Every structure is written in structure tokens, then in C-alpha cells.
Amino acid sequence: MLVLGIETTCDETAAAVVRRRGEGPGEVLSNVVRAQFDAHAAFGGVVPEIAARAHIDALDGVVAKALSDAGVTLDELDGLAAAAGPGLVGGVIVGLTAGKALALAADKPFSAVNHLEAHALTARLTDGVAFPYLLLLASGGHTQLLAVLGVGRYLRLGTTLDDALGEAFDKVAKMLGLGYPGGPQVERRAANGDPARFAFPRPMHGRVEPNFSLSGLKTAVRLEAERIAPLSETDVDDLCAAFQAAVVDVVANRARAGARAFAESFGAPSALVVAGGVAANGPIRQALQGVASDLGAPMVAPPLALCGDNGAMIAWAGAERLALGLVDGLDFAPRPRWPLDAASAAPGAKA
Ligand code: KG4
Ligand code: ZN
Image (cartoon, rainbow, N blue to C red; front, side, top):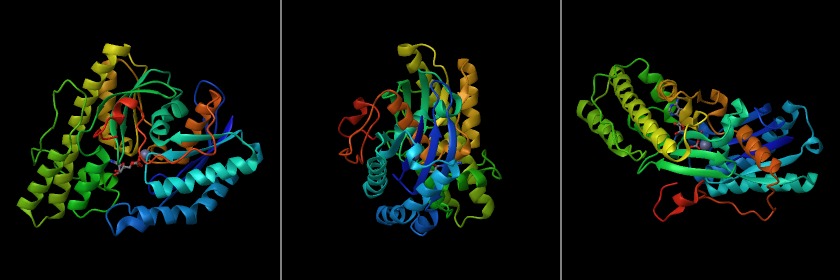
């Protein structure tokens, strides 16, 4: 099954062609990602209106390149998929409408994909991981521990009570005068820093419920930065290192709590999977590797190109859904909010 996937929920315009042959890993035939970082850099974050217009400008070219890199025509596809949310509604409208239009023009089935489900299923594209598995989904807008039970079957075990992990990296980067997105910058600066120079808190450490809280840690970094200002390059390196060390401890501790919650209901997971932009972080991957080996399960993290937002994960989730006969209508409306697990749709819950 050959599927083209389109991703426009945030600040990457992306399209890809993926092949699914059945159970087992899939094949990425093309994966075109055009990031808009430059357009948003001056604002220290994504500006929704700028993002939506940039998607309109870029999408045709990105889709054409995804098809030509893969060496396939629209007619040879078995289906079209586009992310229908959650995300910035202006961007979602652009990609979703384009996906539907291509499906209509080519007379192919269409799949409206949940962006979070696409991150969640990436480990099956890359490694053919079997259900059920424990997933840490950590991006700029989401931080959740989930039991992935099947396509469309997710149970949220824990979530963040305030900031997302990627958001904490982005905010720390911003307060230290580093660029956006902050995660890669903080990781780079932390590599030269002394993590022991500052003792930052490890929020939620030891709690049974596998939830996260990051705003206190972020505030501790800000107070320390203000106290020692003006900051030298070494100060910035050390602040990044100490912040990242705290995050790494928190992630490992919370993943262990998630593993216990998973085991109570579902027994042993087939793998500990990490997905989303934060999965690119080396020390976080390493810490999760330790948690996984204690569990006796493999740790699966996507290759760097599939950690951040991309079209391959959308194409793959579409292929998995289409293989189960799950076809969506061309009247499918964008969903700016779209939790994976109905329980997390409760009022006030942060997706
Ligand atoms: O999944 P993603 O590309 O987009 C969202 O759906 O949010 O994740 C982007 C987030 C940003 O907050 C970015 O700072 C973070 O992932 N990120 C990282 C790293 N690379 C990206 N965080 C920590 N370390 C990294 N190396
Ligand atoms: Zn994402």
C-alpha cells in the first residue's frame, strides 16, 4: 500500500510517500520537510498567521517533490492522508484541504490523521513494534505517557500539569537568548556545561501517577539566571546543562512510574517508545534506554529525521488506518484540539 501524507499542523510544511506491506516496518520512499524557522525566529515562537500563509506558499512544491523523490505518480498511490489536527487551525486547513483535493482528483481513499497518533505509530513504521507498547510522546505542545494498545486505541496514563517538555526547552532557550526552536540549542550548549553547578528541582519525583510538571523547573532556571546576570557564555552553558540534567532525571523517573501503571493493566510492554520532537535529545534517549533495559524491553526512538514533525508519520498512520478499512469523508472538519484518548478530553485537561 502506497500512501502520500501531508503535515501542516505547526511550523513544518511536510509531505512524504510511504509503503506498507503488512505487519512489520514500512518503507519511507520520500520525506520532504520545509521548516519555517526563519519566518518565526524574530518572534521566539510560531506565529499562527505567518505559519498558515507559509504553508500555502510551500505546500504545492513540497508535495510535488515528495512524489518525484519517491518516483511515483498520484495515480500509483493507494491513498492520501493529511493531518487534521491537533494544531494551529490555519495550517491544518491548508494541509487537510490539499489532501482532500488530491484524493478527490485522483479518486483515492482519504485518511484524516491525528498528528499525535502519527507520532505514536512511528515506531511501527521504523521498527515494526507490536502492540501494546508504552509511549512517551514529548513535543512542543504535548507531554504524555500512553499505553498504545492498537490503531486508534490509546490510554493516557499521565500528562503534564503545566508546560510540555519541548515548551520548557523553548522557554529556557528564550530566556537565555538562544534561538527558536530551543531544544537543539539547549542540548548543544548543555554539552559544554557543568550540570552540577546549579541544583534545580526535579518536580513530581517519586509520585505514583505518571504525570509531569515543568513550570517550577523553568522558573528556577529563570530565577538563577536573573541572580547571576549578566550571563557569560559559560553561565549559559552551565544553566543549560543543569536544566537538561534535571529534565533527564524527571523523564526517567516519570517513565518508570508510567511503566508501573502500564504493567498493572496490560502486563509487559513490547517496547518503551519515545516520539515527538523532544525524542531527538541525546541524553533523554540515553536515560530512557536505561529505563527500558530495567524493564527488559527494547527502547525504540525514531531516527532524528522522524522525531520532529514530518509527512512520513502522517502517511504511515494513514496507511495503517486505510489497511483497517478506516476511510474518512471529504467533509472531515479540522480539529484544532483532538486528544488521542477520550478521557483526556475532560474540561480543563491539557491535551
Ligand atoms: O514534534 P515537534 O517537531 O512539533 C510539535 O508537534 O510540537 O516538536 C518540537 C519540539 C520543540 O519544542 C523543540 O524545542 C523540541 O521539540 N526539540 C527538542 C530537541 N529537538 C527538538 N527538545 C530537546 N532536545 C532536542 N534535541
Ligand atoms: Zn509533532
